[in-house]
Amino acid sequence: MLGELQGHAGDDVLSVYLSHCRVPCTMPYDYNPARGFIPMDSVTAGSADRDRHDRQKRIDWVDMDGIMSSRVLVVGAGALGNEVVKDLVLSGFRDITVIDMDDVVLSNLSRCLFFRDSDVKNGMKSEIVAERASQLDPEVRITPIVGKVQDLRDWDFGIIIGCLDNILARMHLNASACGLGIPYVDGATDGMMGKLQVVLPGRPCLQCATNRSHAKALERRFTCTGNASMFVPHTASDITTTAVIAAMEVREAMKIASGRQDLCTDGVTYYDGTQGTMFTLELDADPECPNHPEEDR
Image (cartoon, rainbow, N blue to C red; front, top):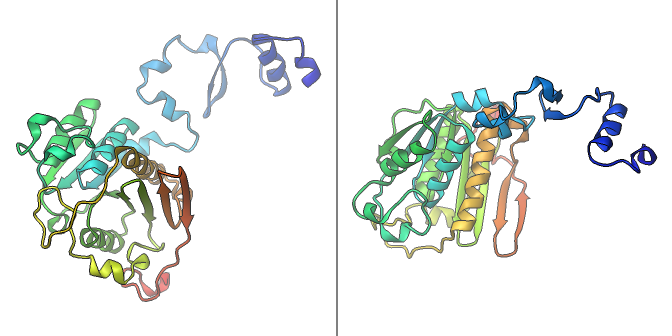
């Protein structure tokens, strides 16, 4: 076929190629993964651009109906939570609840898309994120909750996304998700480093990967407002690394909502923004972990 393509240009090349692919050679064509090549005489000019999610629907495993009908809980509305909620809305999720106990401080503004100077000490993070993110899509419903995840009573969610800054709350969220059988996507950052873990029923959870150093840090809370049980210096934070981890979390949520848990990352994925590298560490379920029934161990 290469010989036949030589000497042809533009539409002629595609015509020759399509003839070998057993596709009618009426030109021009539009392409859709679900329908293949579509003669343009059956496509209204500009119709694809009138669909907000047209480009995303062209990804073969994406199920927009599943995404739009999913009920998602986002825990934490700081830097990571801002990026996660933004990506969820733009990806088509329509029912989002975001919970956080903090108000906005000045140091948040360089890392949080939805916060403004006027919000500093004048508004709660979850409420501001819900209000501003809702402006991205008129069809989305974002419910804010001001409080601790430990006090949450409604767990009627299809996906949980963790954007937390302390181990104690993450362990509570992990245990709740495992006990209720809700897929849980956990993300965390430290400066230019980040990590991601997807906890699915029957798979290793966050507690399976804990060690003694985690136990010592259970009560530490890297909070912006200082409402913590002990003082811990602030950790480094970078918006570019935050954006990468948030995007990875939402992509995993898209897989879950699309019924493609088989595509989810397995183990713990680490990202190094300084080196521009990423690797996934394999993880086995801890036989002593209380979050797994005996048949899963």
